[in-house]
Amino acid sequence: MFQPLKPQHWVLIAAAIAVMAAIPLATRDSYLLHVLILSMIFGIFASAWNLVAGFAGLKTFGHHAFFGIGAYASALISINAGLSPWITVWIAALAATVAGLFIGLPILRIKSMPHVAIVTLGFAEMVRIVISNLQSITRGELGLWGIPAFNGFTLPGLGKVAFTPADKVPYYYLVLVLLIASTAVISLLMRSKTGLAMVAMRDAEDAAESLGVNLTRQKLLVFGVSAFLVGLAGAFYAHYIAILTPSAAVGADLMILIIAMALVGGLGTLSGPLIGALILTVAVELLRDLDNYRLLVYGALIVLVVMFLPRGLATLGPLVTRRIGARA
Amino acid sequence: MNYAIFLEQVINGLIVGSMYALIGSGIALIYGTMRVLNLAHGEFYMLGGYFVFFLIVTYGVPSYLAIPVAVVATFILGALIQRLTIHYLLLQEGWAFSTIAATLGLSIFLQNAALLLFGEQFQSVPYYLSGVVALGDIRLPVQRLLIFAVALLTIAAMTFILKRTRLGWAIRATSQDRDAAAVVGIPAQRIYLITFGIAAALGAIAAAMLAPIYAINPWSGMPILLKGFVVVILGGLGSFPGAIAGGLILGVVEAIGVQLTSSEWRDVIAFALMIAVIWWRPWGLFGRKPS
Image 1 (cartoon, helix red, strand yellow):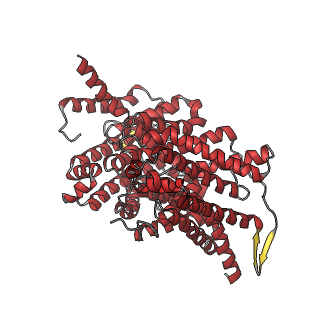
Image 2 (cartoon, rainbow over the protein chains, first blue to last red):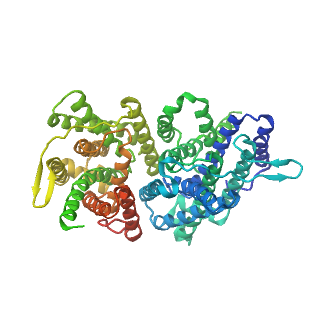
Image 3 (cartoon, helix red, strand yellow):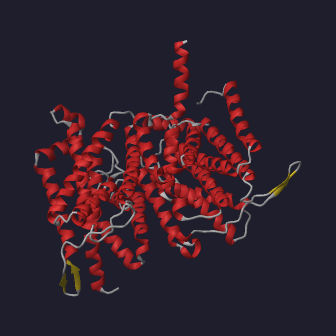
């Protein structure tokens, strides 16, 4: 993944973006667009989790805390201070980053994977309980509603763009832009010196350290970027869905969903989490009857993928082409 | 708060803490022996609770018979799950993460399987013993004293097994150095199987004792798992005595904290304590600093 992109890769990326951009031109079906918007939100989340868990090797289980902090911070600031969501989403993402650094500092000094898992899980649970207990501010389990939508604007040549529940297209393009931008950020970060240090550290921590890689600072940088992106995804989600409850925005279910997506797609690959997010979101929607069994299926899926397909679907592609190539 | 209430809270904290200790010691035992962090441990507690409930309430088995049967059933279930999943995962590369992820998946699977099979109603079991003991100003229900007594007995029995029996020596040898243990003829795979079963059984004992007090439901494993995690972080991951001490400390800190704030903040107090300890002594209050 650190070689310069070949022309065919650029063609593939351009084609994927073109297809995604063309979908609203082909269909305005709001249900289909809704499913795709959700899978893109989850795609950003899963990619950002993968940045920490897959690339940097820090197996955290509490990233839903940053999603919830982003969602609630943006919603509460826009409701109470009357600021535009265009501004509050960035403040919220910064709030998630600060939380990320707070919890990142103690755990990043520890090399033990179980400690990282436990502390992040406990931290997220703490955030959930605080949000649901502060009823005077967040309305607790009753849910926060009346979250303002993004302000509309006028695009030269296209006319007015308005964010209303009836029209999903503006949301679709906005989240698509966010998805492309966050994937680009992750990709650039992984191609930088920091990215090289991360992978070196993941594969051989002591060796990397002995070569003078400042582990704590690099890890903290990656952790902060990841928390920022997850917070941003959460903030977008808040203004898109317009209603938040602690269990929906910070529930452990959400984290399990994201972990399943990243694992199914392929941990430690750039496209894996995106593929996983698309497949699992669409699959669950297609199997509407599955809804009651959704978590049962996700649980079983995680176990089966870990046991039989530890590298995920994204790695199947090159494997298959290589097999066919070898046979020819 | 006056002195009697304070003392009563501390005693209640010790009683609840003794249950946290049982949960934490199961997690510590599995981690100590096979370096696996078991995120499905809470589900052994949940299923143990259901076994007790079905035996006592549905089939009318007397509790002194029902509890051992439920504990044995959970032991078998734990060993079976180890054989079907963890056993294979430990042979893979990168098992440190894959076992955590797989047990997380397992936990979600078992929770939702319980939801489908047993429904979402909260169930409870009648008190095993009634009556109240008064010690000066302090009044303690006999049921709670029974919990404490069972916890002490279990901990004593476990300590005896680990220190004095061939099985215990084998478990401790395997946890210290798996390869060296294999060289002297200890069947590591069988030890793993038994250890996993014992840990599950410890969870079932806690579930059986708490069944009359806390409702049994498909989600009851998660909060207790998180408490178990706090306990092992406090005590030092993988240390059996550390888990016992960690459990008692957590119970008392929670009880006093709840008295000072309100019961809604119980879990926040527990996690804040854990994060504070991680900042200060990442290797736990009783663990040894890694050299």
